[in-house]
Amino acid sequence: MSTYETARELAPFTAPRHDWSLDEILTLYRQPLNDLLSRAHSVHRGCFDPNRIQLSTLVNIKSGGCPEDCAYCPQSVRYKTGVDSEALMSCEQVLAEARRAKASGASRFCMGAAWRGPKEKDIDRVAEMISGVRELGLETCVTLGMLKPGQAERLKNAGLDYYNHNLDTSESFYSSIISTRTYQERLDTLQRVRDAGINVCCGGIIGMGESVDDRAALLQTLACLPRQPESVPINTLVKVAGTPLAGEEDADPIELVRTIACARILMPRAYVRLSAGRTGMSDSTQALCFYAGANSIFYGEKLLTTENPQFSKDKALFARLGLVADTDEASGMALADQNH
Ligand code: SAM
Ligand code: DTB
Ligand code: SF4
Image 1: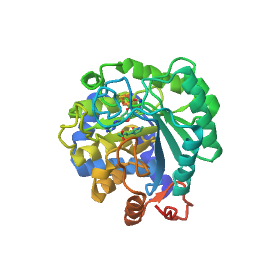
Image 2: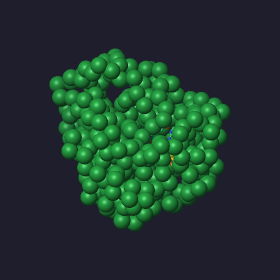
Image 3: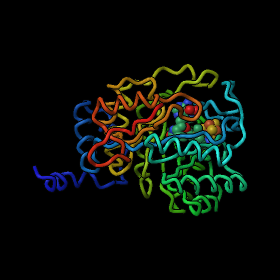
Image 4: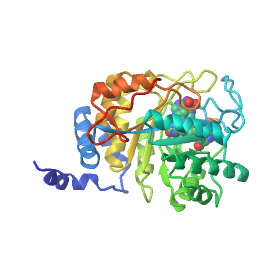
């Protein structure tokens, strides 16, 4: 079959739909795994080169001491997790980290802050970081919590490409995970980001004790936004001692694969990121996630406060699977060799 015919055949599946019903998503999610994978992978191939993976590197620019009560989070001031509260990093420190990320092969630099939301003076400082990171030739992303009117515009003016703000789970399960802010407040921030012309990065977490219905409802909410997010991080809960969710059962890797496959089918043009939780995953699980449609990862030894695979481990994984970073030449160069 020619590429053209393939594209035509796939057209009905690769145009984003915004009217998914919960039943349709549950039917997709629960079908035999081979059928789900086959459809997700076809959609993936119709929209992306399946062997190219986008790499984002995270830095925690303001660690710990957060007043919110997100039950999964080691940075909440309410839980004894050993994460100290630190001041906002200096711009020079952040730029040093960004240079390192770029040298390692990342294309995007994501700066996270343990805030309920930024104050006006925080926006000034983060804006300076955004401009500096952009000048290095990296895409910029920040995750700063809830935004007030006008703040997204200021970030956009500084050169911000993406804002990460996760819905985390379904609206109905959300209140058993977070009590200090509402689902609607999260949606309001996403709307402000969208209105300012910034790309939206929004996803969730699996393994918090949620049901399949909750996962399907989260994906439904994301897919049915007026415009689908450009980036959809799917995190597996990192169980941190001292947080209320530390004793949760391990998420089933096949459920993760099913969630990613459904995200790919529902949001065909989004980058679906296999996010937190990779240190506990086998190469085979990650390979299945990439086959199901994941095409982005966090790259670097640390997430915000917890571990992420070493650079060398990811380089070996990419070599084993024949994957390349989206910063590499189309000829398929392997990840730049770094002495990490
Ligand atoms: N404070 C800001 C906020 O909550 O929007 C930004 C940082 S917050 C740590 C960003 C996201 O990281 C959360 O929404 C959640 O999805 C994810 N996250 C935090 N702790 C996690 C954990 N233990 N396991 C998996 N994902 C986690
Ligand atoms: C996202 O969806 N996952 C990242 C990023 N966006 C900010 C954060 C994962 C955090 C995992 C726990 C930690 O390292 O503290
Ligand atoms: Fe604070 Fe964000 Fe952690 Fe919630 S997820 S406690 S808002 S840092």
